[in-house]
Image (cartoon, rainbow over all chains, first blue to last red; front, top):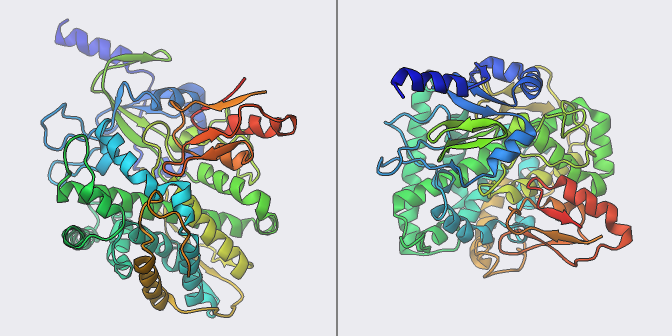
Length: 455
Length: 63
């Protein structure tokens, strides 16, 4: 075929065409209308923005594609020695700051080795051992603000608990949480052309240097945790170097911090706007907390989607994908498909059959999903118990300007009837949790240490 | 009614054990699910159906 004929064949194949910049305000503001329109007209479409890519929004269509690891690749070939694929971000990273996103930007078998190594730290049984620690960190965050009657749920609670707990599992010093917390969040919501960007980059670099320092430290003086595992594990016949380990740690931190914060903030905002449902959830939490958590996950899908590269020509449900095509799996839109979810654009705390895709589908299912649920539920119930009448300050919630990657929030101020402190402040509590982590070797995998933390 | 979890499809979303704790357990090391017994008692058939319906990977097989 001539070039013109190839192009004509490509144009015929890449249909129906949509034009949606996921990083535009339109995507955030008109999300529900766009989802409904796409589900009706084009559940798989060719999106002609950002170099062109397939956009899967229909629940069934996404389900049929996302689990086809035989024809999809997550690989980010940063060294340019393999197929040249560019990973899971669309638009993909530019060459200057291109960095592989840990095992989420790898394919099997390497990806499988990593997950097998890390699962015993992150499984439901592994996470359950940490429950007293998560509760104590949450208690301390609330004690810091309980007497004032004022809280920013993002800054004072939902940013802190996931960050401190993630560092505990990694085997990093807990008190270093603020070195990691701010740059991780700010990197998600700060656009590269904004005036704040250089400062965010500087803090990100500081964080990365801190991490590299501790990777060396743990290598010399091993201590339990995910980093120690990464330093000792063999991945398909090789041992990852410090830089690769750092990339995996950044994946765990990036996945662990901002997403749980986003879910918690959105849920607390919704419950403030629906006080009767909040009272019901608090009253009936024994039966309602699980389904409410899954419903908030569905409705506010924190990680809105993931990119893939088609690794071989394939036809699925009539769409002809070609090797090298880019694809976006819109978890967030698939979660609003009325063919699967009745009344999809409303929150039903007792929703049944809620097979949402908020943790992804297939072999790359969010490895921290059990951490996310445990931390979210602990923070939510603590707020319901200790600030039952909180009201989010009208007009003061700050949502991310764009939600192309994470559907998150910067601030969520609220007021409530002040209460009494019941324990130490945050810094004292973090110091005490550090001692307990070290003494009881809490960050060992569940296969080594099965008992729950004792405070 | 009988139940099993397809180990090729299960990715450890844990919703079956959440919806039907009497029917499913999760492996300590990776959270992937397995059926505690093949036969579903009549009084748990509703829970079994809900577990199958809510599995994101559609890995719960009723037969």
